[in-house]
Image 1 (spheres, helix red, strand yellow):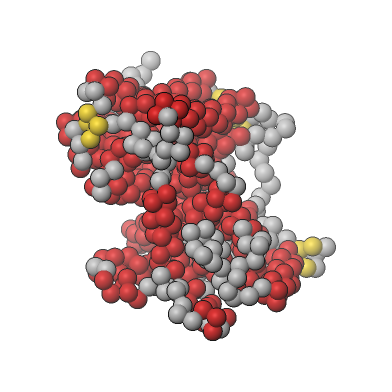
Image 2: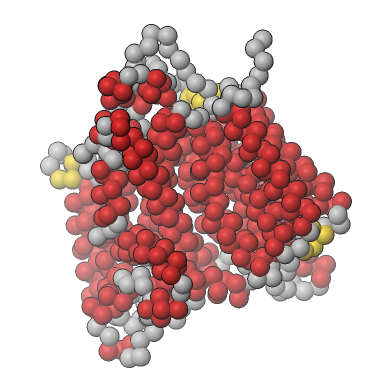
Length: 582
């Protein structure tokens, strides 16, 4: 039941039974300090208090003892002990094999994030927005943005939760911003030269520059207060209000209050696009569901067809590489189908599958308690006798039986919309669990190669979280919607930086500590922030200067800019470029 081969592979890389969750008492830090690039050194030199990246400077026979005895090598959260696996399970001579296996598991984690967000998280958010009767504009900059940016935001929140991985969050948020606004935006201009929508571009560019300036100021001051963290979230609320207001003003000027979203409003999908998107989200699982005799289908047949992640007709007409990738996704999709309900408002039956949805009443809450805090809450025993997961399963089983006996296979119940909220929560827990493992394995790779969290964030984490947006935006441009794709480059990352940084730091504050200190001691952090700001200023000046006519020259300039930035960032990381000693 699940991607057993992947979990077995990852399990071989960790110590048996190791859990990196709430195994120790929380450290008292007042205020909390998020290290965004500094390297700590202890001249005493034997494990205690040393930066974990120092492990490979010791003799290979001492690696395991160093990792076990150094508090800085303790991974917060997650189910697998990656550091213990690579330094204690694998012999030193097989370190390249361990790194290769870790890299494959890292790629698979990105697949898990992408599938969960695309096939389960976004459709349920769409169903929720439909039930709440939100307009396309509000849904586009709230639920749709949350769905598209879920992997980025969850990764940032998880990274900010540990001072030692905060650099991953800073690197990923800024790195993804530079990548999307240069490589992806430039690629759109190369694929399909177009005339940019003036008002949405100027609005989004101004808001994004304000967000970057606010982050730069926070890094310069070295701390973020409760008011500043709330200011990030408040700025996003103001951005949503600005989008809605601009939409209303534009439609008033046109004299058509019911005008469909046009090219000036590209971040909002049209009805046709929503139907197409919904079909894509549920197509892999729903195309076989069109029974000729629906009233004669048995519950067992409905369950079997609903749990099938393969569509035989699509399988036959797709190329070999699509089939190969599908084989890798099937285990993840099967587990998600078992644990995450999906409500589809575009279907007559709202994607109601009575036997499967009744099973979800048991599996979804069970998933939530077993993934929250790495299973610490789910494994807790009430009065030292009965585990929480057992209670959840018992209550869920009773509810599932009641729902099964009081509903039919053909007609969804009136409360079916509740399954959208349950699916949203379950898919969010899956994304959070995958993001936690992703952050931990990136930190492990940084320790192995002695790389800073910032450079890992701006490269691997930023690229992994942005690859889905890259393909979707370029495909949208090739299909004749370059304006929509171009505005998505700026609209989406506004949500990521404001909510990712604001919510990530806000969750680290308690009633006793309302200030989170940041330590941007690394030159790379300032290069990253400066490069992002400079790229935005360049686009803000260059696009209006070309009368919003964006062609291949603009695209080439953006891509060359990113390559130059990447070279400077890597040279800084490897200390070829560094500040002169005072």
